[in-house]
Image (cartoon, rainbow, N blue to C red):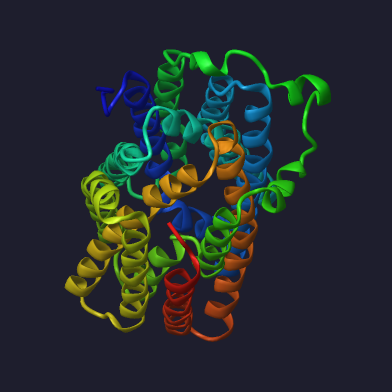
Length: 393
């Protein structure tokens, strides 16, 4: 019987743990840092949207390229290296274009590695165990995302306002992640490049878009539903800005974010196990219902305990959707196309993320934070109807 959690799954889990430790040391203080150097809320939304769009488009291209080359490990190694080295660059100089460049480089690293890494994970599982494997990986990833803000909280407690120093310190767990990638081995079945790759060399940057029309109807129906959700799911920075707007202190804000990540980390593997047994579709839809409840609640909440409950639910939403969605895509794609299938989704999702984050910033600025969160909750309820009627597992 094949071991559920193989050596490759453990290595990739540790890589993600240390990478997210570095990233999430910075994520909860990112809006505070950006505001301190002159970014408006609208500017933060545009910055995050551009950064995520860069990550997504490169996920599509490099996912397809890794399938063409039948090589996954080099993409994983390069992607994590770029992300590790780019984080301290945001603290070197505070000019807007420099900050944009550093943030975009970080997300480019994510784009290079994501499709290849997820294809490696999918190859280590079967259709009956894939949600658990992705759930385990998300759990390790999110454990790092809980440790990172805790380290940031302790540092800022000792050195309030030293945001730039924190960016420099984040390089160390990032380099630890890079070191773990050196232990990865290429799967034997991917040792030779495909015939198509030998004939055409490299795919064009946007050639992954052809996969939408070439893929199965089941994949396309799932893709449209996931993209519709991405269009209304703006950056998590807006959740943190909402806490700030309602008078929550920086330390408590970071504490809520740590709590959310701990819930997510602890619930990710059980959620994957639930999805393997109950079904990917009902598990995912349950997560969307929880998301709608959280966003509706954020528009109304006022007391700290209400925010605590909402961040608990938000951790459950993430556990019920993130790994489950990746497993769902992997189950609908042939083995040799999984990096392309995941990369295509991620690429298109990040274009919608650019729109979502920019639109969220505009609604916040022109109307109110409550209008943003209330409208998001209502839109997700409509998307749930689409998943329920149109998308098959």
